[in-house]
Image (cartoon, rainbow, N blue to C red; front, side, top):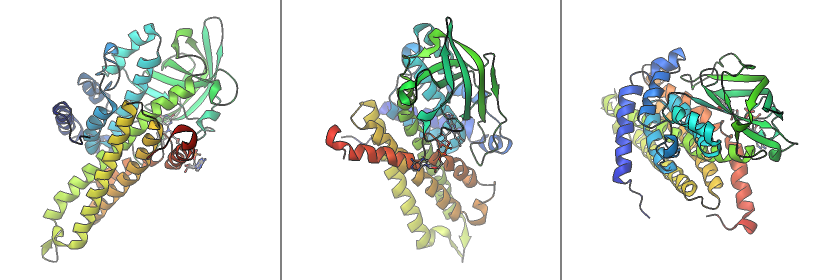
Length: 386
Ligand SMILES: Cc1cc2nc3c(=O)[nH]c(=O)nc-3n(C[C@H](O)[C@H](O)[C@H](O)COP(=O)(O)OP(=O)(O)OC[C@H]3O[C@@H](n4cnc5c(N)ncnc54)[C@H](O)[C@@H]3O)c2cc1C
């Protein structure tokens, strides 16, 4: 068991840190304040391979592990959790296309997406099917040429500004087994986008509803086989949850770094804040919990890379733990900054607002507990989990 990063991983981390310093830190507050989606910066991230980190090399991806991806995403998220979180969703949708797309579809879209020249959205949630995603109603009817898509999706990250939609739709009967996944060009006739949602955080990426009105999809744009769509969506989300957990670890590290600097500069009662034991204890707890969250995320990534039994439960545990800890650490760092932490002069309020939604999306933390409990209670048939 080796907890140290390899030389290669240290090199990825440095590349990501340099990119965050040069391309994210100077602009993150502006993108947040003006709700700007930095597509040109995402394209630059694509030039470094960050748009297809764990997508296969033959599709233009870096072919790296989930563990490697956490190292890159954490560095980026410490500067800008919102833009990084979108990048992780793009990576997830791109990996799904590269893994289950038909050869011609993969050959066309793979290099464009992994290179960051085109962007992708992941479309599962509907207004009536959030936590209960398998209840989705969007339908894809088979005809002679392919499929005809009707229905709507809610809360889709990037929607309206992305180029390819990975859409889960019903081709069969009720329940998970009736769902298929499709690659749908975002400008296909019959697709309309709702207004940009006004959100508490994640302002550097748009969130919109999507309506599909008799949208024609070529038959070879089916991902995998008919009826496999829910399984594909959940496989995507296993990694997606590690990614979102990583964004929380990154946000928390960014907040802790800011707090560490601040306590040595800010003076009250004729002393720097760092001299007060109450502040020292707060920092100690923040660091302890952050390290625990990071190790949990890396453990889950390692389990997923190894396709280990219960990898799904580890991803859910990591997402639940790291997003809760991440939010708490950001909030504590804000508290350490006093009134200044509440202003936009410092990044704390942005980091905290961005981290909040990580407890909600890609499955709420209540749903994460459901998954973990199901695995735990099933161990009689599936083997112990410890
Ligand atoms: C900013 C943002 C971006 C998003 N991006 C995407 C995207 O790109 N693609 C996509 O497909 N979706 C996306 N989502 C949707 C997100 O995944 C859902 O919001 C989330 O899964 C929760 O669904 P819901 O909002 O319908 O809440 P609900 O399912 O209505 O849940 C409401 C509350 O009830 C709780 N609850 C529900 N069922 C249970 C249960 N069985 N046991 C205990 N508690 C329960 C939930 O935990 C929650 O607290 C995004 C959401 C947001 C806010």
